[in-house]
Structures are given as structure tokens and as C-alpha cells.
Length: 238
Image (cartoon, rainbow, N blue to C red):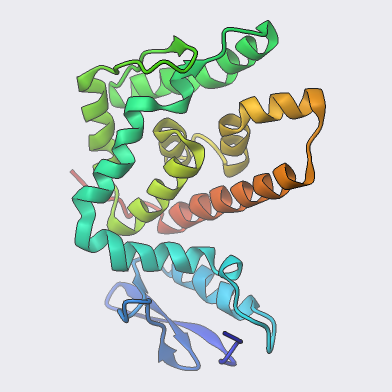
């Protein structure tokens, strides 16, 4: 689909904000009006549409914030508990809990980068997680998993859209929550989630396919972090 509009703008009323294309409200794939709770997010979404070049094909890569908002409105709202469960289940097999046995330099790097985040989750949410060597599944404390699920459930439908994406991309609920809480930047989240691969790249180099995949991961993590930042404190209370 080529760019079909001349102007993208924002209209605010009654505490909500919608994006207009040539004066008409933008709609999601499910035909709902795209309404968001903060003007900052609405302006960022309008900015995505405004940045599409004249007469250019509108590509998915142009609109990461729009996709997250539409997903929140179309999919999360109608199945909120399922999305919470699908996000929270990563606590049972969080990337940060599975450590290498060797070489010593990788073991040290994992401990240096990953353990402080697990310590933070234990302190912030009362949710200590068990660390193991290798890939054999370790059962996490039920209370910790439940507390991390409760942390996920504090987020609004729109925020859940981004939080699930961050969790899925990183393979770690702890990393995603750290981004949502502002403890990690998107770039730090990338370095943390891709630690093992980056370690191998340092030793053997990076091929073009891996470089392209990493660029996509960076973009997606950045979009999720920006989306949550624009939502500010729109998480549900209590």
C-alpha cells in the first residue's frame, strides 16, 4: 500500500488522543479508532506516518509504534488474561537463569551482566529465581513466578502489547520488566539478551545474516522501550 494521505496529525479530547490522517481518525486492522492515553504516544505514532516518504510503499518497518498500539487495542483488550499468562510464563524459563559452564570468560561475563538483574528482580518484586548451569530445565519457586505474573498484570492493555514483545524478543521477562521500569535502555537490553551471541562474534566474527537479524532485534527492542516510555505511568494501579 502506497502513502495515500498528505498529513498526519493528533486530536485530543477528554483525556484521550487519536491520530488523524487528512483529518480522519486512524483505525486499527479490526476497525477500531486508534486512541491512546498520552499525547506523547499519539504524536510519535503520527510522526511515523508523517515520515513515510511521498508516494512510497508503506512498510511494516515504518510503523512499529502503530503496530504495538493496534495490537494492544485489537488483541490484548479482548484476551487480557491470556496475554498476561503468555508473558508471565517466561519467568519459568528465563534466559538469565541458564548459565554456561565454560569457558571461564563467558561464565564471568554472564555473572557480571545477568546476576545483578536477577538480584534486582528478587528485591523489586520479591521474586528470587534459581540459576543453573546448562540447558536442563529448573523449576522456579511458585511464589516467585506468581509475583512476577502480578508485576506483569499491573500493566495496561497497551503496555502489555509492548511488554510481551520485549519478553518474547529477549527470551527474558526480567529483561523486559527492567526496560519497562527504566532500569535498562533498549541497547542495554540487546547486549544483555544477546550476550552469548555477541561473545561468539567477538571470537569468530559476524556474518551478514546474523548482522541483519541483530539489527532487527535492536529495532524491535527500541520500539518497545519507546512505546512504554511514551505511555509514561499509564500502568494500572493496584
